[in-house]
Amino acid sequence: MKWNQAILGFLKTLEPPAKLPRGIDVLYPFADPDVEKVVTQFYKRYFDDDHQRTMMIGINPGRYGAGVTGIPFTDPIRLTDVCGIKHNWVRKPELSSIFFYEMIEAFGSVASFYSQVYNTSVSPLGYVRRGKNLNYYEEPKLEKMVLPFIVNSMNRQMEFNLNREVCFCVGEGQNFKFFDALNKQYGWFEKVVPLPHPRYVMQYKRYEIDQYIAQYIDALEAHGIQCRISS
Image (cartoon, rainbow, N blue to C red; front, side):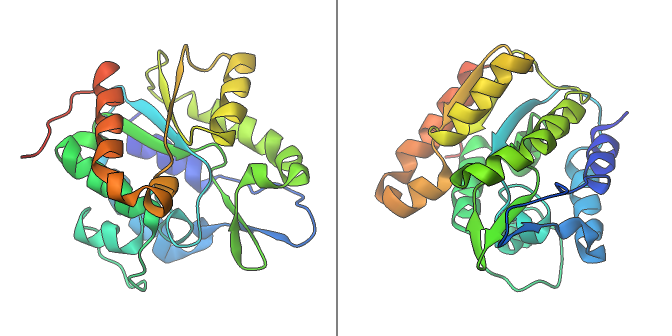
C-alpha cells in the first residue's frame, strides 16, 4: 500500500477519546470537508509511493497549525506558499510551522524532506481548554484518559513502512520522557532521538534559530537522512 493511502486511511478513521476531563475539548479537523480535501491533496503530492520513511513525532496538533490544516507542523500560510496546496482559510501563522519550514528549506526542499520523513504526533488529535492549546501531558487526568488512544494510534502507524531503527521526538522535555517510556514498553523503535521543540526555539531562542536548524539537520544526517543544505 502506498503511504498516502495508509495515512489517509488512518486519519479518516481516527476516533477521538471517548471521555475527556471536564472543560477540555478535542480538536478534530478531519470532520471538515475542506480539511479532507487539503489533506488528500498534500499526501497525494508528497507521499504517493511505498518506500521507507523515518518518523518525526511531535506533541499534539495546535489550533493554528495542524488543528486547522490537518497536517503536522503546517499552518495555512506554509501550506500554500511552500507546499503549494490552495485553501480558503485565514492566513494565520503558527510559530512551530515557521521554524519547521525554515528547517525544511535548509534541508533542501519540501519534496526531498517528505520523501524521507513522516511527521505525526504522540496524540494525533489536539486539545483546548478555555480556547487555548493544551498539551496532552499538561493535565494528569487528560494524559491518563488519552493514553489508550495514543497507544492505539501508534500501533496502527507501526503498520506503515517505517524505519524502526530510529524515531525523532520533537520536544526534549515531557514529550520525550513520555514517548520514550512508552517506546521502551512497546518496542516500537530501537532508538528515540529528542529534538528541541520549534515553539520553544521561536519563543525563547529565536536569535539562535540557525543553530537549532543545524541541530535538526545534523541529527537527521547522523541517522541516514540525506540532506542538501541550501546555499
